Length: 111
Image 1 (cartoon, rainbow, N blue to C red):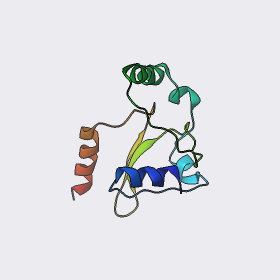
Image 2: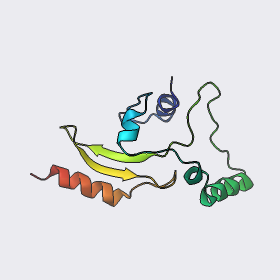
Image 3: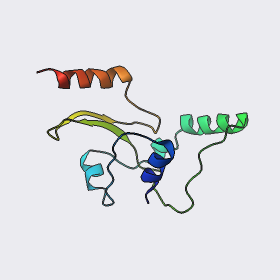
Image 4: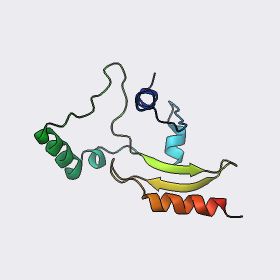
């Protein structure tokens, strides 16, 4: 079982997901690995602040080896398998705004 699948099961995430071990789609979408972006000063500060407050941090799965340096992104694919929205995260916590996603979905629903 992959870390993604386990996370989806644990969080009861209702959305479909896609994994592929060769990372060819990941690379074609322009996603990359980055040690510098993952372990940037803001991320280290966040983890340090959480630890100082005593907030439990997510633990890595002991029996699964995932790549923590893979950068993420958000994509919307229409019913014809056309990419309608592409967002490459600059740091792990970087996600598009809800307004940006909704605007993309609204454009897709227009004739």
